Image (cartoon, rainbow, N blue to C red; front, side, top):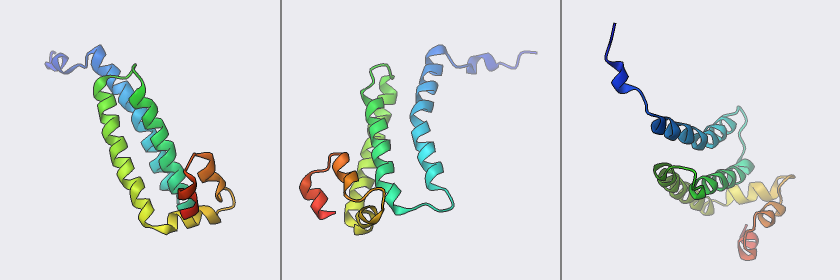
Length: 121
């Protein structure tokens, strides 16, 4: 019997948007799963935010992505930047990275922080 559901079927264009959105959301899901471990730690916060920002930048500059997806990614980057700036108000993040044996000051140098930012950290 016909339930009239064909009108609700997604078009090929809508499926493309769904697929692109899934790609974008995967980095956020992965970050959430990583941070939700039983032992999350502060030294992973800034590198995690940097990785998310890197991926969002790639998506927002990718002309293959639909304008609606790129616009949404742009808003996500603004939100991420706002939270990233909040880490500047807490020395705990920087101290934890400097004291972490894998990061120290090398992390900040490797990702291109300005020298005065590194000295502040």
